[in-house]
Each structure stands twice: as C-alpha cells, then as structure tokens.
Length: 130
Image (tube, rainbow, N blue to C red; front, side):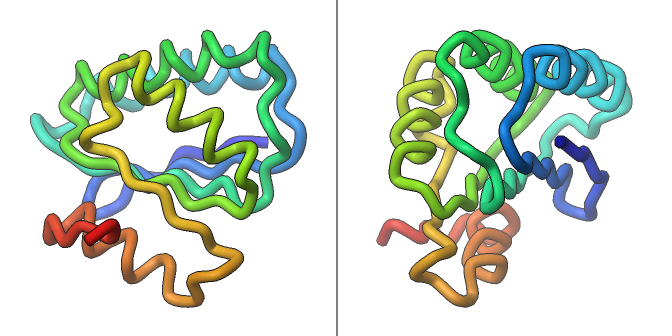
C-alpha cells in the first residue's frame, strides 16, 4: 500500500506492507501527476515504518521515483523506518539516484520523536545526523 499526501512542507509518502510491482509502478505514475503542480522547492517525508523489505526487482521503480522527485524540486527528504535491511536498500538507491546528500534516515524503533526530527530536517535544515 502507498499513499501520497500534500503537506505544508511538500509531500508525505507512506509505504506499508509488501509492495507489489503494479503498486510501485502506479506510485511512480501518480507521483508524476502530483508533481506537475509542485512548488519549485519542497521537502518529502517518507514513512516506511510498516513496510516490508523491498524485493530487488522493484528497486528500479523506486529509483525512477526518487529521480522524478529530485527533478521536480525536492530539496530535502527523510525516510522513517524500522528495518536495518530497508535502510540499507534505500541508502543504496539514494546513492544511485544522486539524492543521498539530501536524504536522512530515522530509525523509529529507537527514536520516539521521529516526526519532530524529520520535520526539523525538512523545514529548518537541522541535520538529525549531527
């Protein structure tokens, strides 16, 4: 399952469960439509706390989506997760797509106020890694 929500800082994307190929393709296409009216610069919060690790054959769609968000004006993003495997997958994808320097990862299993920390990065440029 996925969901894209417009927020005052940009967009919140939620992924849950075991994603299927059709679902991830649909997310990319829906993102294209949503981003047609995006502001010149925006942030993205990706909530993956309830997502299963991504099957390798679906990573190319996530890469396509990340490139799309960056091309359309994404300035910073945060990925909130609970799985070390998923974190490693998305760090690798972010390096391939060129967004790694603008993306931060928050482990919601050990950080209670993850949303505040995430929004501080997106809105105020307060780096959670420092």
